[in-house]
Image (cartoon, rainbow, N blue to C red; front, side, top):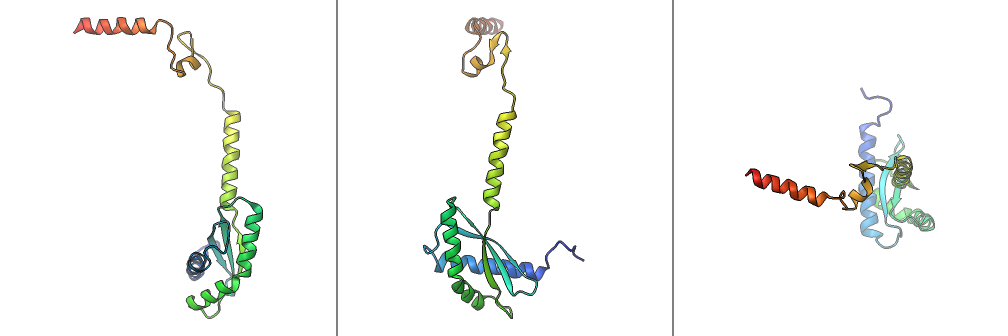
Amino acid sequence: MSSSKERPIRLTRVEARIREILSQVLIKDLRGRVRGFPSITVVRVSPDLNYARVFVSFLSEDAEEVKEALEVLTRLHSEFQRSLGRELKTKYTPKLQFEQDTTIADVFKLEEKLKAYSQSSAPEVRGTVEGEPVDSMLAGEGPEGDEENLESHQKGIHHEE
């Protein structure tokens, strides 16, 4: 028995099929008519299969362009509806409602916040190694007299051989 949080298998299959059909329509039939590079990410169907919420993400970050693209998708909904009616083998064709999927944008915002937080709270690594500042060692500068130590060490190795 499935838990109450899981969606019934039939609904999940119908949602996947609707997503596939609408994505094909978007790619093949409506290419160039919708700006912002839309991508159908998720479809949620009502239990009676009469309604479907179609979540669309956009590569564009321009809010005005995204708003216009959603309006265009809504205006073209009859073309989506017609294709869905032909391809989907159900008694009813769900009525479509397009919504912006902000999940990806939200993830990017969260990553930026985490990055900013980690940079602001990370301790600055400073110190010395054998009396020489770490910064100078990272810049490729060695401690004073390192060449002499290296040469004497190499001579010692050659003498032992």
